[in-house]
Every structure is written in structure tokens, then in C-alpha cells.
Image (tube, rainbow, N blue to C red; front, side):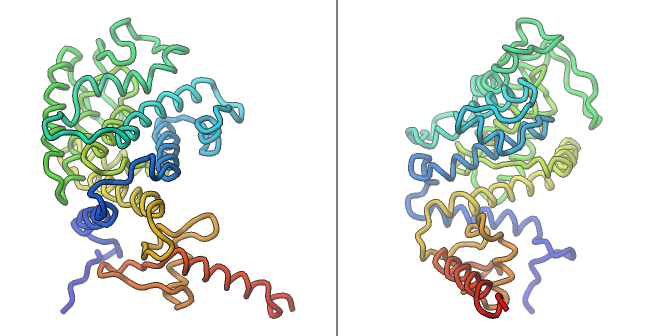
Length: 344
């Protein structure tokens, strides 16, 4: 009897999601063993960068919408009437995120290079928080707590119920965190997303900075992914409740939900951004990779099931098609919609 790969709710079990991460990564790195560098797939990386800058800052309450973030980062133009602080938050975060993506255009890292260092942690925080602090520094900050400096204040219990350690413990805790982060990504296996979830939650528990720990934590998560050969992920603002709930569960020693969220983020980045950038017209791709402004993945799946779109199902049950076939389907759909029967 064939084993059912779906849970009672119709979702793939977590272990299958983790295995799918390995499968999609193998698919995009089969030619040269690495992800396509930004210089080769510039548009894909630009879209991922913009989406990350928008969503990660929105999770913390930033009010800029995606179109405003795109105007700010692509055209260096401010659109809409938002607080100056919101524009500066996006600019700072985007600069930090860009520094990680740009590493993909650099020389390969050697096996002896540490995956992450204390300097990396401080640098990302300084990049992300620097612009807004120049305009509006934290009201309680002393000079040593400027962007890139560990906090010198104790933090009250957070809304999740977690109490960060005393500020005097932060330097040693972060030294331990860097060591643990390196160990977590030392092996690239199916459980990597879950180990990253533990590392990410541990950073937020330490809360090493007076402000900006959420943004810096997500930047560090993406830095770890990039330096491990994976694409950075976008935790979307619409996932905020699920993300915070999963983070609280990881705080309590159960990283599974957060690990799955990270795994799905990797799959999303590969299928929606990386695969389309490197594929030829005739390459079979998951429907999510072929969706665009003309048609979404759900509509493509429906067309495939009805036999209107030439497509095949892979061993995992996912529908795949080609750009050429999608273009042909959309052209025939347009002809049907504008033909004699539609006009009568």
C-alpha cells in the first residue's frame, strides 16, 4: 500500500518539507554546485532583496508598502507621506541585507573560515540601525550602546514571557552563540532548518542589543544561510503571527514549527526566484516558478489538472511545466476569451 505523504489537514509532514529543501537545492546547484551569483541572476536577487527589506521591517511595525520600498531602493525616491524614521529603517536594513547577498559574487569561502563572527554580528546591527539612530537615537541609549555595541541595560520580560539575561552576561553569551551557530551549519543535511531555528531563537533570547534585535536576528539567519550555500529567505509580514508563535515555541525547546517556516522560506526563494532566473524556456519547473503577473500558481495548477496546460507531476506529486507551455496556454486562453463565442 502506498504511503500517504500528507497529514490529516492535507499538508506534507515536516520531514517531507525538510527533504524537499534538499531536493530543490540539488536541482538549482546541479550544474556548478552553487547558487547562481547575483551577477548572473541580478533581477531575481534584486526582488528577493526588496521583499526581505520590506517584510522584515514591516514585522517590526514599519509602515512602508512594497511599492514604496521598491521606489526607495531602486530609484532612491521617497513616495507617500510616511515618517522619515520608516524610510531610514528600510535603507539601513537593505544595506545590511545587500552585504550578505553581495558575498555570492565574491570569492568562495574556505573550509577554515568561520561561518559567522562577533564582528559580523556587530557589523550587521550597525548597518541596519545606523541610519535611523543618526536621526533618532534610542532615548535610553548611552554611547556604548550605539549601533554595533552590546546593550548596557537589562531588558524587562518580553511580551512572549521570555526574560533576556543581564547585560553583563551578553559578551560571553554571544561568544557562545557564535560557536553554536557555526556548529549548527557544519553539516548541510535535512535537519539544517531546525538547527537554524534553534540558533535564531537563541539569539533573540540573548537580545544582545538595546534595539533592533529582531531585524538583526533575521539578517544573521540569512547570513548563515548564504554562507552555507542556501538562498536568504523572506519571512513575510503576513506570517508575523505564525513566526512569533513558532519563535516562542523554539524558546521553549521545540524548534519544529520555526524550522518548517525556515524550510518553506528556502523552497519559496528557490522556486519563485532562483529557478526562473536560470531556467531555459523548455526546462520543466514547478508551477510556483512559472507564476507571474499574468497568472498565479493556483490557476496554473487548476489548468494542469484539467489538462488545459501541458504539465507533468513529479515523484513528489508537484505539477511541473515549462515557460513555453505556460505562454501557449495563456495565448490560447486569450484567444478563447476574445473569440466569436465570447463576443456574442
